[in-house]
Length: 234
Ligand code: 6PG
Figure (cartoon, rainbow, N blue to C red):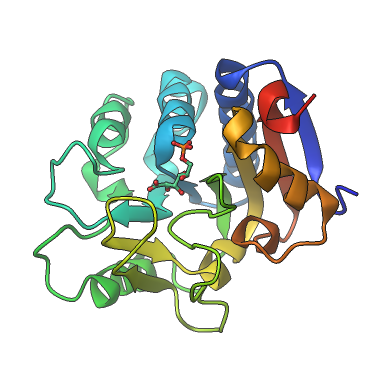
C-alpha cells in the first residue's frame, strides 16, 4: 500500500545511510531557507549511527551554527559508555565547523536526577512546541522505533514529550525516549533500515495494516522509508 510513504529502495546498508543522510541535509537546508534555526533528531542503532556519520561528513554544506541536534532516544547508561547513542555521534558532530556543544542536546545519563523532567525542560527551552524539521528513525526487527516498543506505552497523548523505559526488550533495558506524539511533531520523518531481519517490520509498515510503533509515526509534511533490498525482500 505504502499509503503516505515515500518509498526509497536502495541496494545495501551503505546506500541506506547515504540516501537518508542526503535527504536529511536537503530538508535541513530547506528549513534554514525559511527559519532561523533547524532541528534534527538523530537515532541510535547501527544504521542510525552510520547516517549521522554521513551527515557530519557533509561538512559545510549546511550553516551548522543554526542547526540543533536532538536524540530520539538514549540508553540510560553512564555518560561516555560505548552503549550511548551520543557516544560516537557527539565526537563526530563536534568535528563539524561552526557547531557548538550547546547545539548538541544530549539526553541524560545513568545517575542524572529525573531524566524525563531534565530532557523535557531542554526541549521546552530549545524548541518548545515547535516542529522538528527532520526526525531520523531506525527500525527494530519487532517494529520498534526509538525506544518505543510494541505492546508498550508509546506516549501518544498530548503534552508529554519524553518517557522512561525500565525494561526495554532491546538491551540495555533502561532507556529514555521521545514519545510518539513528540516524534510526530515533525515536518519530515525518515525511517531507515537494512538487512533481512527487518523484513517483517518493513512489510507491516508498507502494508499499512499494522499498529506497530513504526507504523504510527508520521511527519506532517513527509514520511520517507529508506530500505535496502534485503529489508524490502526485493
Ligand atoms: C537504539 C535505537 C533503536 C535502533 C533500532 C535499529 O537506541 O537502539 O534508537 O531504535 O534505531 O533498534 O537498530 P539497528 O539499526 O542496529 O538494527
